[in-house]
Length: 217
Image (tube, rainbow, N blue to C red; front, side, top):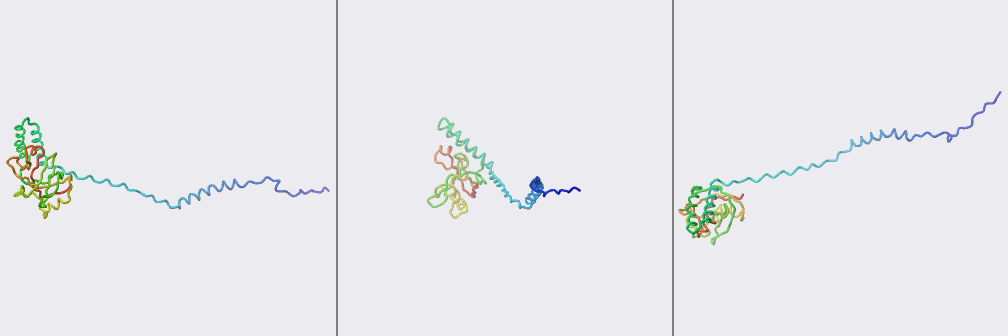
């Protein structure tokens, strides 16, 4: 009877190792992605700052020149051109009555409302009363007298105790204003004009005016 030989002990180093790592990594990838997605869902979303656009400022209201004032300016400007075009002193002088008729066609002496112009000068006379001139067109002015003697009876100078004086205190030269008041009748110019010379009256006229209201624009 033959003896049976048992094999010797098996040495593990003789058996090729089983590689588990790749298998574990492959299995872990989906799990890692799922965990990352869960973290992203649970993290608070950073608040976004919304900057509102600055509102566009509303355009300043447009104050139109009243038709009567516009016609008055046109009549005075036409008289100036006629004076400049005169070939001699007689021809130049004839521009004044022509202008007077044109002014009377444009406005009537008396009250006017809501005319528009720019402050040309603002001062006081020796008595502390206000002296005001407003330019309504190119070198065309409406103004108070600048002295008490000329102002006798017209009362155009601004009394320091009057509301119109207080309105004028806040004004500055060149400021646009809207105003109301009174033009005086004149047989020479239709409305009274205060220049000393013919040339001044036709080229840079100063029409005497009593102000009753004055508002900055």
